[in-house]
Amino acid sequence: MQRISVFDMLKIGVGPSSSHTMGPWRAAERFLNELKESNQFESVSHVTVELFGSLAKTGKGHGTDIAVMLGLRGEDPVTCDTSTINKRIERIQQEQELHLRGERYIPFNPEIDIVFHFDTTLHFHPNGIRFIADLVTNQSVQSTYYSVGGGFVVKDGDLDDGYDENIILQYPTDYAKDILHHCHENNLSIAEMVAKNETAWRSEIDVHEGLLKIWHTMADCIYRGTHAEGRLPGGLNVVRRAKQIQCKLLDYTNCNSREEWIQTIKSRTYNFQETIKWVSCFALAVNEENASFGRVVTAPTNGASGVIPAVLMYYVCFFDATEDDIVNFLLVSGEIGTIFKKNATISAAQGGCQAEIGVSSAMAAAALTECMGGTVEQALMAAEIAMEHHLGMTCDPIGGLVQIPCIERNTMGAMKAITASNLALESSAEDAKVSLDDVVKTMWETAKDMSDKYKETSDGGLATNVSVNVIEC
Image 1 (cartoon, one colour):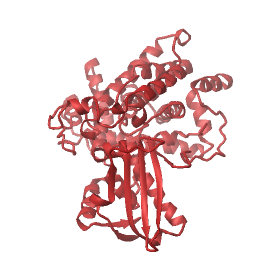
Image 2: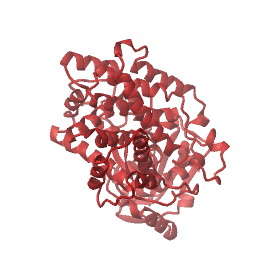
Image 3: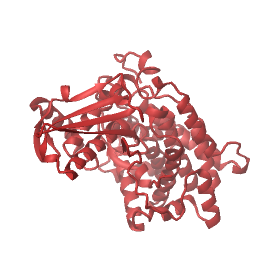
Image 4: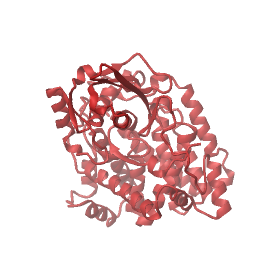
């Protein structure tokens, strides 16, 4: 199977969706790079973008059209200024001109040149996107891609996610049973095993620093989200709640930085109800930022980007985790995500929300369990418990927006991860009746059986039973 790095599962990007925003954004970049490599870029006179299946049906709500334009402009989701995205898009709409790859201008009318094929789904995956470049030679060049979840993109005909087949890992893992085998045979924790594998891609120092950068991005997102107010964009008028919750929990204490805020939280004692509120607050903060085209960490998707940061911030604030602890947490969570990626899906368009919130909850549960002193068996058991109780969860975003029920689902996923961890830590893993591999297989079978209307199309569930004019969450 493919060799997938933790950094593939935990990527810095922009909301609101990894499959509908990040994927199309990266696909646009790839198309332009291909034009460059074939020496056709300078001959491009016009570009048309076609969206198919789920990308068409919920593309507007997920900002797919915006992502495509930013990608065609050559902007990087890791570094671009998220605060002025709307201004840049408005300029394209007003001037009907696109600065292609930041190098040359071409005519571009988003209303005409981005085509939504609502009734057509391409053969390989529900998230299909096609780019057509007209050349001054009266010829045209086209490429079709699939956004397969978590920001992963495959090109039609390649279908390999672009991985280097020459990567050789010290401890190759395709299933949970492989993790168990390698850890037992070599007396390793999951984090230690994954850390050794990561050196196939980068140095130990780069792994450590890279994961701390991931954590700082998560923490910054939580901090921003807990200090922002107002209503989310998109027409549902959903009110941000994270700031009000944290203000009450901290008695309206003002903090001037992320670190000061974290230290203030850590310096106080909380009862059970208050602790639960903090976990929900952390998750809400991330996903309210995600819904506002803020910078988040795809973990493993944007729609589920609040679960792992919420559980990790809980670990940091209430158990005084060190930097090494944080790195270990991310190593374990990323590895669990790869098991789902290889054997099932992390795409809601393929598997419903069980493939997003369910997977992120399983990732967080395993990570927290190992970091709290659990055995390898208990960590895998925690991941299994978390996913087992997300099986069958549908993806039915109201209005195609990553808001209702997506934002609150992250709070539930975080709490389920903590609960799963607590259960596993108090259990004897050898008494477990269901393995993680069993539940991954079951999730994939459930995904294939699930009606397409519950797979990020907004054709069923809450999306059809709740009026978009109702302000409710």
